[in-house]
Image 1 (tube, rainbow, N blue to C red):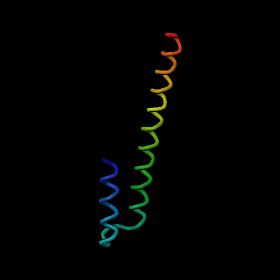
Image 2 (cartoon, rainbow, N blue to C red):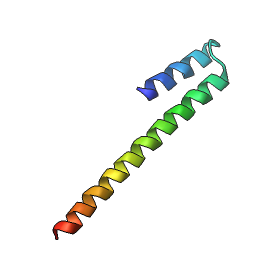
Image 3 (cartoon, rainbow, N blue to C red):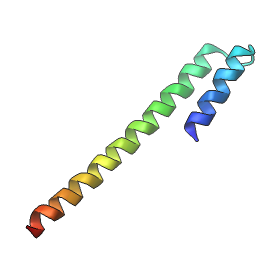
Image 4 (tube, rainbow, N blue to C red):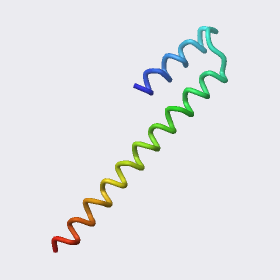
Length: 56
């Protein structure tokens, strides 16, 4: 979803309907959400590995 929003802003910038600041802000938000997702995935993986370690 964030990628679609960013692409939309890119297109609006190309057409002169959005400023470069708007595009950069949307890109930053996209990167922030991607980072948060990766952090959550890492936390989940850590927990799975901890459980596996306890099982063996």
